[in-house]
Length: 69
Image (tube, rainbow, N blue to C red; front, top):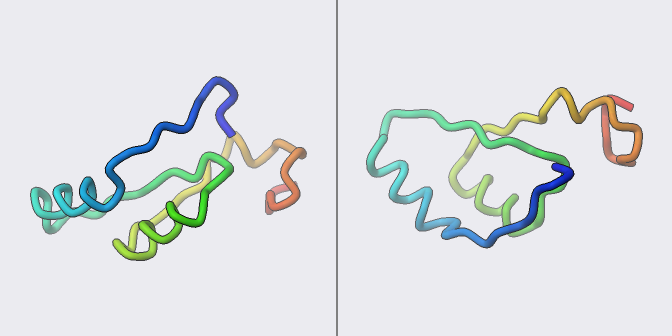
């Protein structure tokens, strides 16, 4: 997880609806910074967004779910 970051609630579905309306033939990639909540996963699945993990965080041995450890 980002060290100095914080969670801020966003518009979720409304944001992606507007994004895809404005850019209908574009693909978007969402970052996994180490902790994704169930409601965020639901939005990712609903809009079929491609995800990526940040390689830099792949070498942190603190995460039990980290496939790089």
